Image (tube, rainbow, N blue to C red; front, side):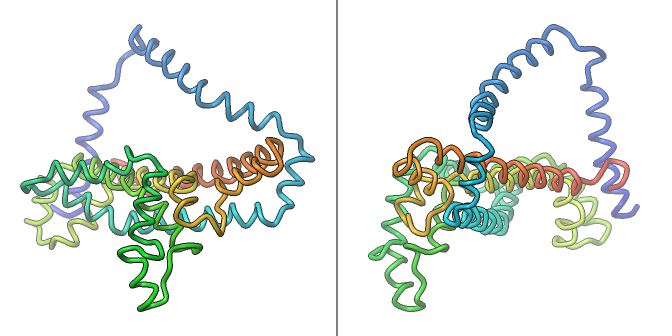
Length: 287
């Protein structure tokens, strides 16, 4: 029995589950589900379509020609990339620990991870300001010792984005790891694989789709963050802050144009990330 055979077993298990669970023909329940889903999808899409269709090519061109808008969008993408990377590097190990170990207070740890999702973004910004601000717990000593500051810098933007978006990576990765049968890891260990090789060759590929889903959600949430960023950093402006600034200074037209540009760039990136997630998921017959 080889490592590939262990992985193939996972594929056969999933294939049998899908075959048994697949309906022979759509019934009333499925039609109702699709109807309700279509209503929700329309609710989500129609406002975005209305925003895009009410913009003229001339207005989009003028807004795209503004150096401040381009810089703000680029800064949001850069900060979101760094935030998603940090969330993956720290969140995936944490998710694996939560999925594979039992310890007192595990439920409390999971609740603390979810807590930033329930905290208002302005509250998150104030809390971060107390920790990473000029007189914060970490902000002041780091500024004094190594010259690292979080107000008015990319570091502060990444901190604000990471705080509000990291739970998506942790939760999605944890669900992915929990879906991997622990017996497959045990079989791999009996074949002579160590813990690291078992994780890299068996567990990680099987949970890859869930992990990438969490990273994509973290990236998306980071790009859209406004409240925590505007309180902790404000300058340099990210795209959401710039859009708000345009709305206050020039009205709806330019703000809507900048918003459409951000949506176009974000949509292209999300499609790319989803494609990478699907491409990185091994097919049942090729594991």
